[in-house]
Image (cartoon, rainbow over all chains, first blue to last red; front, top):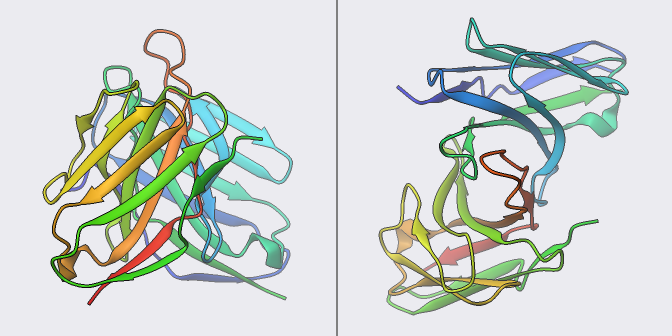
Length: 112
Length: 116
């Protein structure tokens, strides 16, 4: 079983829809949770960074962490074609603070 | 903005060749990382370095080595390239943070390496 599971998709939604991207994990020691966005032929860029449980909002993006369920989510409101990309979740524990464990990535397409 | 620059976007090499992939970061980060990214497998850590001349194995170090002679530069070496090393290679860097706080990593745009 992988430490971090992420549905690879692909996921295709119409412009303006609310998008929900999710990851589950098995290591209860994970404390730091990140979402990266990767456009085609580019490197991943950091989108959201949260510590422990709770919500964090940044514009149209909201990251949620539920440590009791070992489940994290990224919500995109009013999705735009420019949001079309692969989204990767990543997480780390305090002990392995500098090492990230990544999900497989979900490929998202927003249709105009 | 943090800039992580990988020297080549595309590279084609032959089986058995020694291959060097170069990465430079301009933010004085202490930590640097090499990953490979394959469809269905996500990003897998090959090697990382916490400081100059320091290196540690990641999850898949076999067939690879690294060199960090200067703080800003981290090189990945394929000692004898094989076809199963055809992949996208990504370099990243990060601040060390304070204590055990994890800092986000900043990535380059990758080198797509084909071994024929």
